[in-house]
Length: 159
Image (tube, rainbow, N blue to C red; front, side):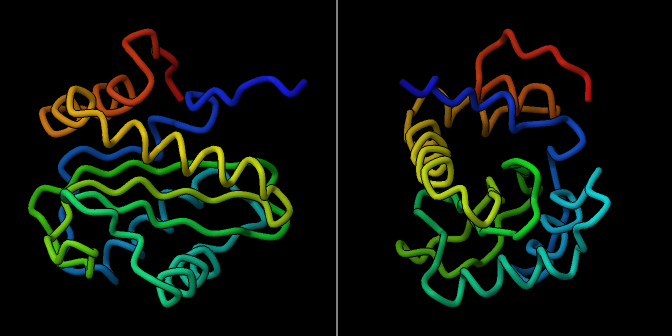
């Protein structure tokens, strides 16, 4: 039997920003691509950006209540990775509920990681739909607090 996925394994302080300044969905995707590319030798920010944009063309990843979970698959990616950003000001996103977003959790997975992709997307959606967790995410003042809100207070790794 496969062991359960630990969300903390895919989060990192260097891919988490509290109070991100951005002006549009396109700029947000550029900033998310930059964060997701941190530490990747072979991955190109522009390729990650195009991957996020191409997925968005299939339908909005704005899940409602001010939250977006942009995601995509990248060939050659060694393992899944997540970027978390809390926006300084809400930005228009094209979400299903027509509301601007103030929180984005971007997910990249290797091209062939179908099961991990679905599990991680599901976990992220479940976490942000929990009212207590969502309140903590909105109230966070630091990247550490954002990650701690998603995975619990035991997250103390400095990456």
